[in-house]
Length: 144
Image (tube, rainbow, N blue to C red):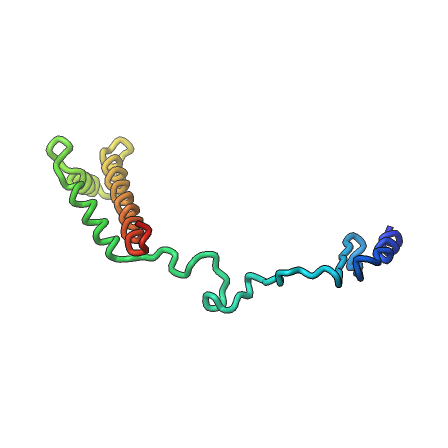
């Protein structure tokens, strides 16, 4: 089979020279057909980010302490309004922390209201921080 591949590669005269690197691969190259684009290795771009190839910007998170501060204040203020039977979500969450710490070595039971207040309070906080990041960075980068 290698002999038939060698004769087949030598009969291809119009395409130029060919090299037979392994018995299973046939590499053809041509002097007539040149690629208009030079092949570049993306890992060897000219020191784009300190010599390392990265898919994202260096500061992809674009952390800003204003967003954290205003997001925290923006969540604590509305969650402190007494809307749940005369209590606020923040007050219920912090009082449930105190109740659970009263019997410290034992963790909170699955039926404890602590878990409800924990999930609700943190879900609101993380949504507030996420939308604050989107709004603040969208405004500074003139998306809207």
